[in-house]
Length: 437
Ligand SMILES: *[C@@H]1O[C@H](CO)[C@@H](O)[C@H](O)[C@H]1NC(C)=O
Ligand SMILES: *[C@@H]1O[C@H](CO)[C@@H](O)[C@H](O)[C@H]1NC(C)=O
Ligand SMILES: *[C@@H]1O[C@H](CO)[C@@H](O)[C@H](O)[C@H]1NC(C)=O
Ligand SMILES: *[C@@H]1O[C@H](CO)[C@@H](O)[C@H](O)[C@H]1NC(C)=O
Ligand SMILES: *[C@@H]1O[C@H](CO)[C@@H](O)[C@H](O)[C@H]1NC(C)=O
Ligand SMILES: *[C@@H]1O[C@H](CO)[C@@H](O)[C@H](O)[C@H]1NC(C)=O
Ligand SMILES: *[C@@H]1O[C@H](CO)[C@@H](O)[C@H](O)[C@H]1NC(C)=O
Ligand SMILES: *[C@@H]1O[C@H](CO)[C@@H](O)[C@H](O)[C@H]1NC(C)=O
Ligand SMILES: *[C@H]1O[C@H](CO)[C@@H](O)[C@H](O)[C@H]1NC(C)=O
Image 1 (tube, rainbow, N blue to C red):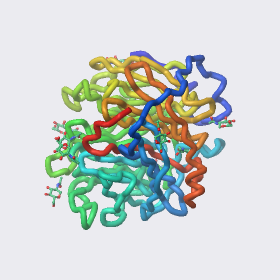
Image 2: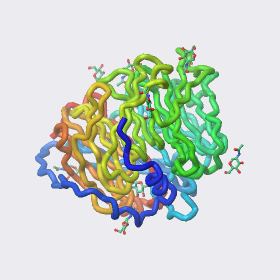
Image 3: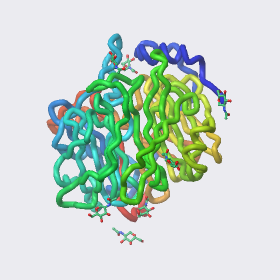
């Protein structure tokens, strides 16, 4: 197994997370940031991209339309019925643009045309129906419901969209699943799906080190994965916890905890690998990218080391999205401003490209919108309050298409935007969209 530079060095970085340390260890690289010329005679709305402002005064979903040429435009703001909150950054550090230390704060089920968001300051989650004909229009289903824990930060739908699970990362850190099928009453807790994580955390939690990161259904819906970051300076390993999911939606009473070093020190984001059934990609803030093999069961996965690669020069490698068209995973690094493209062959990850978002940009959450034979990667560029769109015509060939200012339009619409609070980025494409240009 290949390791990135010394864990102690990484640990020092993680506890300081100082913004001024950024330039020192940047690696040189090519920028493919040229703007594509576009021809698009019939430029309609084909979908939407969503994120939340996560404000303590009121949590709003911001919806941007996605046009058939891949560009995005801010369109509407929808109240979630709850409030946002920022986790506690290291005492000596600045307030960071990663308020929940997580991936999956806003999620979509294309299958069920549903969107769900966390309200971290209310200990609730909210469910919305997406209008397939006008995806920037959302209708709340029932009302916000308790997350059965404190400081909810990550959500996951199963593939059918009839089950939604939430992970709480505060003093009461836990997992709870809900049935989404009652479109009148809204989310109904599933019996036997509450599990505590058992970590000694505060509300709001301190992070990023030591805080819960993400939960995710396996591709076959039979397992639920949870990633919790280690804290190298406190000597705490990262953890990947796994529960079996029964047909009635309940979770097994036994879970398995896979400790680092097998899965790395600071797991931040998870993704299923479609081309390798049972394989899970783990983005590790301290070590690079791991691929964990669950195809022969949980016990075997726990006993086998992950296949790991380091991403040279990485500083805060955190968020991941998959492109069906290129088959690659795209991973953002908050402090190098790079997106790293990873291809996975069987169990083996390899770097196939790196792209600069923008100097001092600070890319965070991202998603890939796939329609009409084209894929577009939409990235929240935190330090600029921007969305950036890249076209993904083929592996290794991401091309910057658009940079959209978000602060101006949001302020004009009267929606409060505090840059370091905003979080999440997820897309929805209208069913049967064949048009692209
Ligand atoms: C497509 O529509 C968007 C939003 O109206 C606009 O910003 C963009 O320039 C249009 N693209 C083309 C090629 O007309
Ligand atoms: C949609 O749900 C059905 C039924 O659960 C499932 O078979 C299918 O794979 C799902 N599609 C996606 C894209 O997840
Ligand atoms: C929990 O963490 C606090 C510090 O945040 C510490 O004072 C306390 O002893 C810990 N409790 C346990 C049971 O480890
Ligand atoms: C729970 O225990 C059963 C029986 O030993 C085992 O097959 C299964 O893999 C375990 N599940 C987890 C998530 O540890
Ligand atoms: C969800 O609720 C519906 C309607 O009550 C029921 O048919 C279905 O079995 C439930 N699913 C789960 C996973 O509990
Ligand atoms: C896993 O990695 C550790 C540390 O690098 C090593 O000591 C151990 O032998 C490896 N185990 C397997 C099963 O490869
Ligand atoms: C944010 O932008 C400012 C101004 O360009 C820059 O000085 C600062 O280093 C940037 N912060 C990060 C985290 O990139
Ligand atoms: C999309 O296509 C599927 C299968 O071709 C069809 O069943 C469905 O009705 C279509 N949906 C819409 C909204 O046109
Ligand atoms: C992206 O999120 C960060 C916080 O995580 C925020 O600072 C930034 O303004 C966001 N940008 C957009 C376009 O939403």
